[in-house]
Length: 133
Image 1 (cartoon, rainbow, N blue to C red):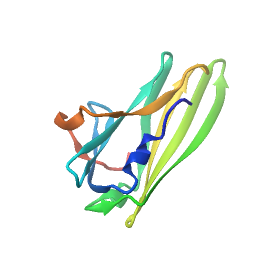
Image 2: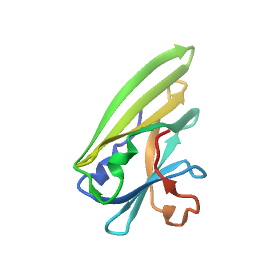
Image 3: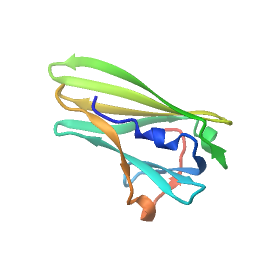
Image 4: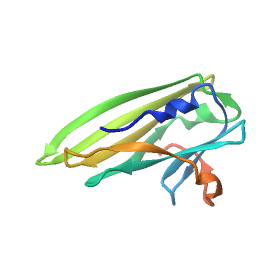
């Protein structure tokens, strides 16, 4: 899987609110600095990347400081001829617990996906509180 764990940029940040935009398929964080950091799943040619699950978003509720950000990769292997699914889970730990964000990438074995940090998400109309899905 080709990606950089740029969720590491959240480490040490104070999160004011965690958000999800269905129209943009994005997960975003409003920080105490009033900056919004948001990620969208991206895939190379012949790859489809998407956020699959969010577990325990309550760990990101209120004014919380991100203590640690970790990542675990799972190579799903080949499910059929040229049919691969990779999974990675980003864990954001705070004083309120840990939130896990699972992203998957379906591809043909040659291409991959990643979570892309985007900077133009300030004016997204449908930001909603991040909930489990």
